[in-house]
Each structure stands twice: as structure tokens, then as C-alpha cells.
Length: 146
Image (tube, rainbow, N blue to C red; front, side, top):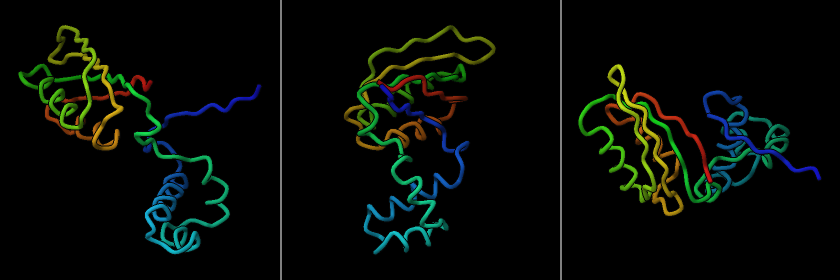
């Protein structure tokens, strides 16, 4: 049996052509253009390249995520940092399942948060971006999507 493997890859390391395919698909799906030709011209992509990748490149969205996620964070050892993260997840309608925190070393703490994402009121990427922008968040790594 030949099953396809799928990968989750950060936007900052994939070729620009994949980003342009996603942009063209978004223009088409939002009815902002009247044809595929118009969409590919707007994003600077050839039609042949669009057709080559359009059925193989997808943006990670809520429907594709599943129900749960685990993120790992490196946080400054400052009062209220973890609380702001938990509030942010809650504001996006995520539900915390478990939190694991190591004792701080050298002014930072390693924290893993496992939470439900099936009822998010925003995109998963928006939630992660909101967390990354919080004061005291040094690093955020996606560990798993279930």
C-alpha cells in the first residue's frame, strides 16, 4: 500500500513558489479574481506552476488540525508571563489540558502546554503568533498536533 506522507513546514523555509500558490488559491476562494489567470498574474506565478502545485500545497487551517496541540515554550523567569500565555489561549477559545514546567535556570523556564484546539475562534497560526508576541516569550516550538 502506497500512502502519502504529509509534512508541516514553517513558512520561512519553503520556496516562494508555494507561498504564491497559496496566495493565488486564497484569491480564487475569496472570489477576489474572476479567473485563475488573473490570480496567478496578481501573485507573479505562471499558470503551469500553479497547476503543478495547487492540489499539493495547503495552508494549515483549523479543519486540518485535529483536536489537540502541544507547544513548548522558553519563557523569561518573570512574574505573569505564563499567565498571559494561558489567557491568550483562553481568549482564542483554546482549552488547557496539561502544563508541564521545569524549574527556571539562567533566567528562563521551559514550559510545555497541551491544549484543545477544536473550538478555536481564530486560526491556529494567529494563536501561535499572538503567543510569540507576548513579552517574556523567548521561543515557541510546535511539538504535536493530534
